[in-house]
Image 1 (cartoon, rainbow, N blue to C red):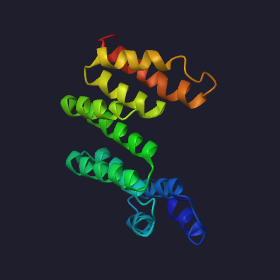
Image 2 (tube, rainbow, N blue to C red):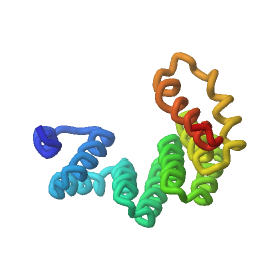
Image 3 (cartoon, helix red, strand yellow):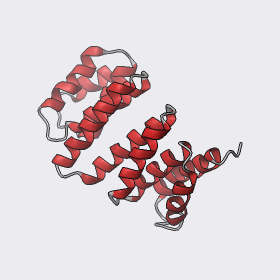
Image 4 (cartoon, rainbow, N blue to C red):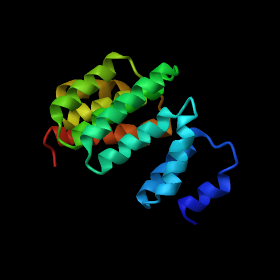
Length: 178
């Protein structure tokens, strides 16, 4: 089935925000404006609607609209912070920094990543910020952050199989290793 079918099946249920974010992103990928708008309409009535704003930022960046993505990421961080979700806010701020680095906006990526690291974020946003630093050419700043997190929570599968390997690869890329 399509995302639209999934959304219609679940329309009357109490779906969590992350599921709505995923349905929005899938609808955008399928160019299903009706299904995408249904999720955005929900977001206007929700205290966690900022998560859909973050998804909109990701879609804008995916489509190369960095000005719009920057504005939406800033709105997302502000919204999450206002609702008391500091970890989510730092995650989106780190994702914004990583997006800047991936598009080659090194100055913006470094500034955003430094700001994230100054907030004392949890490990995952910290690694995303370090990844942005490494990709943007600030390897000397990224390496100590990554080094410190290599031994943290060894049982944390997501940290050690998703975030850390990406950060390690960014270090290598940033160092010129091919």
